[in-house]
Image (tube, rainbow, N blue to C red):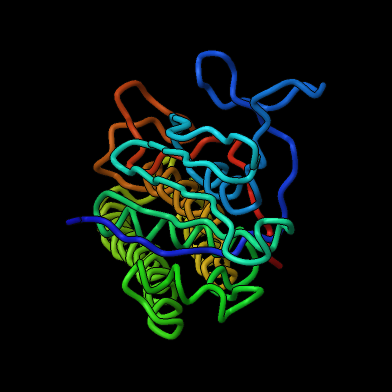
Length: 269
């Protein structure tokens, strides 16, 4: 299938924390022993939490007797991820006997970013199976041997990391452009009242860009995005060509990078 990637991930933890209601919607479980219990697992949970847009969850194939065997579709913007939870060892008697087959559909950039975020959130190599030999049968259906499958994960992670690095580089170039305009403007206006504030905000932008580099070194994508959003806000105040009043925002000024304040953060340090 074009614009798609299918890989598998080892499930490490799962519990009866979700359920499917009468309308087929997945929701947190409120207790009791009623029908519809779903063992979602750490892989699916990390994937859903990592998506920064409101995700639409559709239980394509609800669990029956085996609460950890199901098929879920997650949509966030132009990215769709179909998750197949299935046993691969020990007849499904143990949580680590399950894996999730993940089918990412969307642009390469969206797929790679989702792969990068998921691997960072899990904090362990998702391709490292508890029972490697037992995984071979499923990997073969996906068109991989173990080595090629690990490479597919690593390549996606690296491309996701490179995408964030490109975002930082773009902000660095914007900073240089704005700084040149600021210096030319200062030469013309001299001691204009906002000059000192603009210079201080340029320093703030430099610090935020440095923070984005540090966050990338920790594979902390939300930290990268928040730092770049702060840098952009500072550069708007610095840029003499921008109509926004210094020290505040004006109507009609829209940030190129949008980051939700309440975004969940996974600290890997």
